[in-house]
Image 1 (cartoon, rainbow, N blue to C red):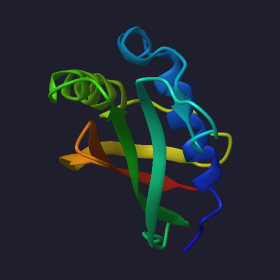
Image 2 (cartoon, rainbow, N blue to C red):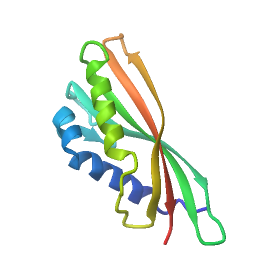
Image 3 (cartoon, rainbow, N blue to C red):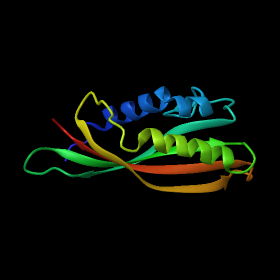
Length: 136
């Protein structure tokens, strides 16, 4: 197994989300790897946890990365969060991401979980995606 492409995958996902017009139209530049201290915008994206598994074979090293993109908003109801979650999914599923190390063979949606958080005044949707990455 190789975890060598994990940082490259995260950077490519971030660049894809920042560069997507629909995502930017809903969240602006509020896309974080680590949520910054201090006041946060009312709606933002956070790149979250990741699990990786070996998918190497006789042709070379590779891995499957399950990663999370979280939508967080203090907007009333789930409509704002769901609209942004849909835009994130549209931007990532099947995307041809350019990695600085390795290549994405495929990227697909796995699942989502929507819930109220905090004092129930925030909405959060965690979107799980899977990327199959081969090292060249």
